[in-house]
Image (cartoon, rainbow, N blue to C red; front, side):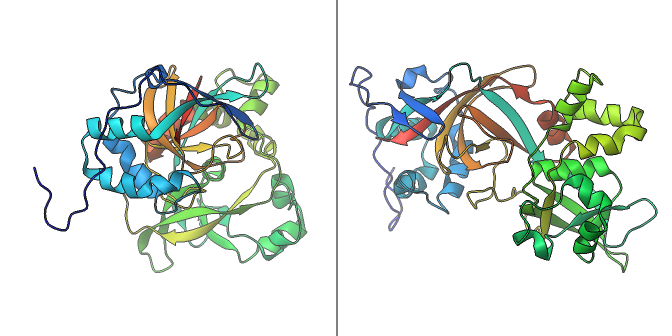
Length: 353
C-alpha cells in the first residue's frame, strides 16, 4: 500500500546476510569481550514482540550515542513497520556478539529494579519521622561524604543536612529501598492538607561503597531468603537490630524532586532518557555502552526472558561483564518481582555492521 504524500519511506527490508558469511573479529571492551555469533544463536529471537522494545529504542534515539546512534533515522522510520520487517532490518544492519567476561569463572547475573510508590509528608508527623534529603552543600567538597551511620549519629553531618529535607516517610526500610532503586514516586501531603504526586530522582550519593543488607544478613546467619520480602520479614521480627542492619550499608543517596506529568513514563536512566518497563536495563558501562540494543536471555524461578532490551542505565552495584538490572516498572507488583529477581543471565550486544 503506498504511503501518504510527504511520508518518509521506510528502509527496504532485504534478506539478512547469509549465515555462512565470515564472522567479524571479536571486540574488546574494558570489562568484557564481545564474541561474534550467528543470529540463530540468539534464543527466542523469532518470537519477541519487537514493537514493545522499539519504543525503548526510540527513547535512546532522543540522546543518540556514538556509533549506534547513526542508525536512529532508520530506527524511527521502522517504528510503524511490522515485526518481520524490523527483524529483517536488524539482521541486515546489526551483528550479534555474545558478551563474555575477561576473567574465567565470572557468572552472569540478572537482578531487577523498580520505582517504589510511597506516601510522605512535607512536615514530620507522629508516624512519618524518616527524612529524605536533597544533596547538602558540602557534598561536592567532602569526598567521600559521611557514611550512613555517621549521618544518623554525628552532629556535623546532621547540621549539614538541616533544611535539605524534601519529605518525611514512615518506614526506614522504605527509605533504604528508595535509595537502592535510585528513584521513586511519592504522594506528598502538603501543609495545606492537599496531596500531589511527584517523582524523587537520584541527585547524588555520599560516594561510600554499596553493601547489600541481604548479604550482611546471610553472613550473620540471620536468614536464608535474602530477597527483599525476606529482608522485610526479618526486620519486622527483629526491630531491635534494624538500625544495625541499615548501617551495614554505608552508601546513602540524595534526591531531587521532579513533577510527574505522565504516570505512564518511567524515570530517566543514566543515558538521560525515560526507562521503559520490561525493555530497559542497567549495565556496567565498561562492558556495554549506553544506548546499545541487547538481546537478553534468563531463566530462573522468577521469570523467563528472551527479548530485546536497551542499555539505558547503570548503578553502583551493577558491575561486571554479564551483569544487568532489569527495570520492571513501578508499584507493589513490580516491587515483588524486582525484590525476588536474582538468576543466571546471558547477553548479546547488537552492534552495527
